Image 1 (tube, helix red, strand yellow):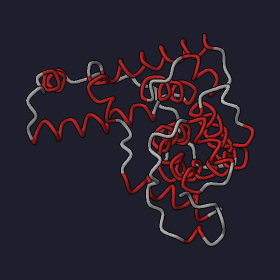
Image 2: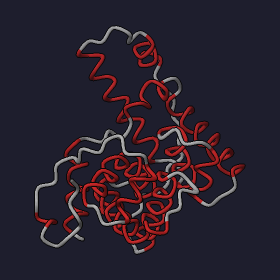
Image 3: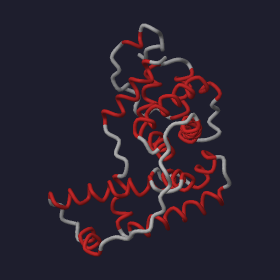
Image 4: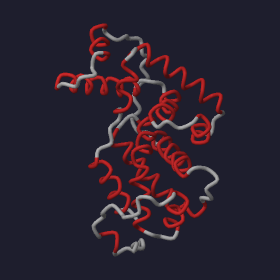
Length: 233
């Protein structure tokens, strides 16, 4: 049995609700009806992808978490208007993107754009190609490559960076990204290919190897975001 979103329930422990297979449309309906467990599940289901979207704009972990919490509260207030005409993830991403842009406009720090002009060291590329047999050294190198990829993505101009995160990392379609960012699909395609070109110049063959682990989303961050939003209700 789910727990309504009441003032007394906010202070209760927040376990993962037992609704893992609930379809998005039904999940949204239950959230709109005020079911706390459904809202918790919605956040846990979309935390990783929405955090990545916010961070692609703000380039700061803490600011991305703040923007995501703000976005969840906005989504909660508006979810009664959701009619499943777009995917729930697309609908939520648009809210998160707008929240992150609004936060940036409020004067939050925005790092300077850095053009990528480096290239991979031959020895490093060979190590990655020969990394089929994992060793502690391979794991350390993979971590370093993941960190380098994250830093290189951060250095992309904002318009390219957000498109790249949604298309390549979150594997959204061009149509979905266009809907999230309110831009033509042709613009999505051109920005995505330009972003890949910049990254390829800096990272060469290391992009595809490290991409899967980019911007890891650990359990502590997920728990912190859920708890922070619920505490603000």
